[in-house]
Length: 351
Image (cartoon, rainbow, N blue to C red; front, side, top):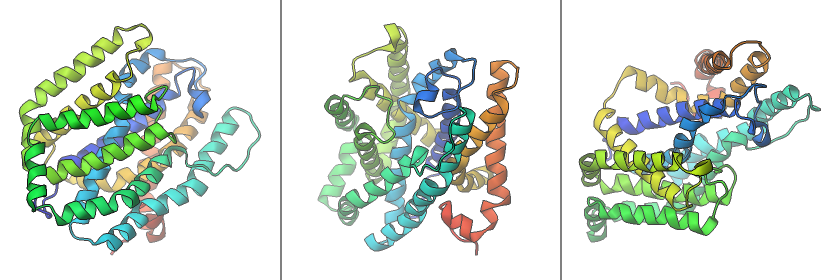
């Protein structure tokens, strides 16, 4: 795959994944157990909202890890290892450290305030744990990625491209994620944040994301050919899970379902989203700062709107709008225009 070829579908998937993350986090605020994992919870719950979230939950974080690995493939084409580490340090490590000490403590204040607890300053990775994982994966896998880059057109590179152009290659991918689940045995499977399960699942997705791009058009054309099969299998596994008591299925089924959802998403994204647009250009820049900020505006909206005596569904919409508009306005009016803040939020300087 040419190094100057931009994959707009990957940009779209990153934007969509961050949008879904916002909706997912908002949904936790309407579940009775949300307070146990540090969320502000509405007095009246909306538990049926969690049914679609159970489908989303097993692939939303893996999607971001896969896409991040794909991004490194493109970033490494025109950089040596020192340049890549410097670039990823600016884009990932600086926002992580800034968020750890300055952003996450603010929404922890709001959580403490909402629960009428003593206010205290608590530096924490919070939802930014993902950034810490990604930077560690870059450091750990960089020698492997450099080697693969140098040997992309060798016999080994050619073999990798041919192998990933066949559906049989997907059995290796599925087996790796099933093995991780069997080894770690996470309870629940969807608990990714700051766990060994999240770390090892993430590094697998990050590595295979890089390999998917390395494999080139043969792999992506294979996905297009089988896209409806992937989607039907994913739907079937999800439907089977919904029919089980308390949605309980063997641990190996969840990574299998997750991978088939992801394969379908990548295939349909490649088919329908791989084209430029002004909307994508704007959202690609805005998505990262919004990811960093969204919990702050989500918690502020929860503090202001949850006490209102209105229907729970209306509260959901109002908090969603408050969070989305608040994040976009803060990005557009402040972050976007100040170079120092652009650095802290992982954006390139103006001019």
